Length: 270
Image 1 (cartoon, helix red, strand yellow):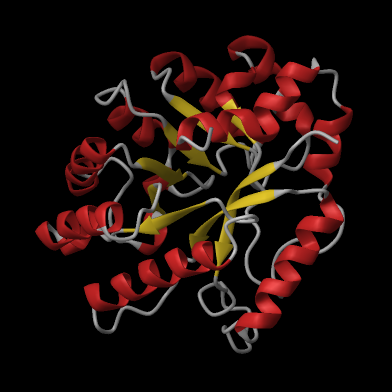
Image 2 (image 1 turned 30 degrees about the horizontal axis):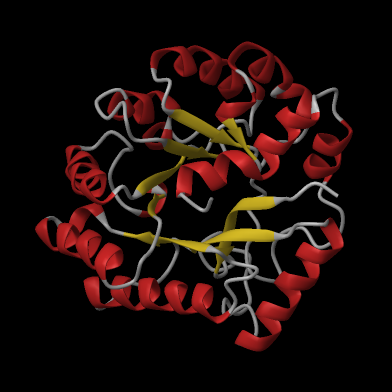
């Protein structure tokens, strides 16, 4: 079976931040890891790129951010066979201290990129504060993973494109942008403006939405991502988008790029 790397796995719970009630710990660490790997095996996913959840409590400011970056690096290091790379978080509102954290996650932790989810971060995706972070990230070849949920004006994909055009040699992985039909049409326009935008399949409800995108821009602009969170949230059985990708009218070479080849190239895993 063709190799599959899921580029969009969050380690952490969103139960509290989404108002779903109950404890947010997601169970003990051993159970969390076991359920994640079992879910991957059920779906034929070989590896995943892990990202902390953005809804963490920051009562101690940057000390809490450093803690979660340390934790995601340790999560990766404990099982690199399943988790070959990890993505960190840097908070734009930390200002210059955030630049120091970019340097630290590169030099000390060896993380592959930085995730932005600005609904939790108090700025829009095209904030000058984010631009300064990406300027520092480019020095280290750290990849921006930028969430672009529909109906959130601060996360609108056009805001990502406005920054990405100024960093043409740096790939930007845009997460969740195909989660609505209307926004998928915006993506078709923005992909022309910023050729370094790469989009994942997170929260996609049917592959039919992205087939025109693949036909127009090629398979190199799409990566497989599920937006899986720690148990109990996220898919537990068959992931419908992955099933559709396996059955889609695509050449094997195209399918291979989407399922693993593109993210391996972007993150330097090959």
